[in-house]
Image: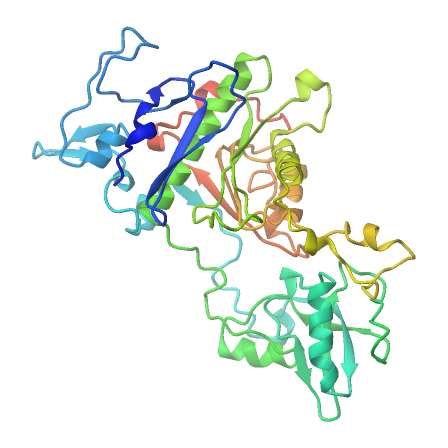
Length: 436
């Protein structure tokens, strides 16, 4: 648990707060972050919860008091509680109580995961192996391998779609080096002039990791493949601390969606907090929360979806704060290019700097196909939404973009369970034919 002292104890409660917070167990601190514009002389307030142990000045008639419980964590978060048949007072949402590092059983998570890969996809027959094409080059002199590996990193060619493959294939008379996927580079990559190498050529390689020993042998006949039985598609375990972090994020999303509705916008919001385990010393990581709304009505622009606005806001934040790693944009003159464009233009090519790597996006509504593809290209880690859009959704509604054949990134998808943690759907529902 954590108890706010000093300045942290001065934040008052508000039904429409301008500050959010989460507990950082690594630094043993409570971190407060503004997630909307704060005006001069405006009080900074946080949201204590839906069940209060005091009279809420924003709601004069709200006099409900939370019962006494032994666990101060429940009081700190204003947890709603119920009594069981024995008369013992228990929390309604068990993941709000206990130590932050405790693992939450899958059945108690406040969300359900959208399955991206079938359990029985063993690929134990050669005809069943899914493949893609990639550029490779033969290297006769082993001394050039280390030079080429450094060049690949500097040129930004380490694409995650090939991370399940080993970089080198040893042959009798030479070594074969995996360079880049054909899907991103339709023309042969231009190799460094400092080394005399043959022209790159295309080979067929496995698209997925090997899940069984049999599939490992089959796939390795095409290209050396990583063996990771069931690890690649197994969902990660969630601790109580991380669930609380996600719960706060979903509450923020719904509060912002209602605020957008009050302003006459579509009640749709997206929220990107810093990663749960954030290294505050690493300036390349997102240091502040990003919140965005659907602004199609006010701007009269059909592409101003909340998710796209959030991605744009992350880019603007990084550019303004200077936290962007400029060295990642420096592409050597011998980097692969398909035309005579300058090195500056080459640095802006697809994949040179993914915006949402290792980040999670929370949104009130299931992203549409366009937004889902933008999230895929931004390399988002996970997406959580509350309201499904069966006619237009791209995360399981009308289709599931990260599940499609041929995509080079798969992000996790979680559907928040309606009502879990006090997150309510009805106030921001939209017609399911609206493309969000």
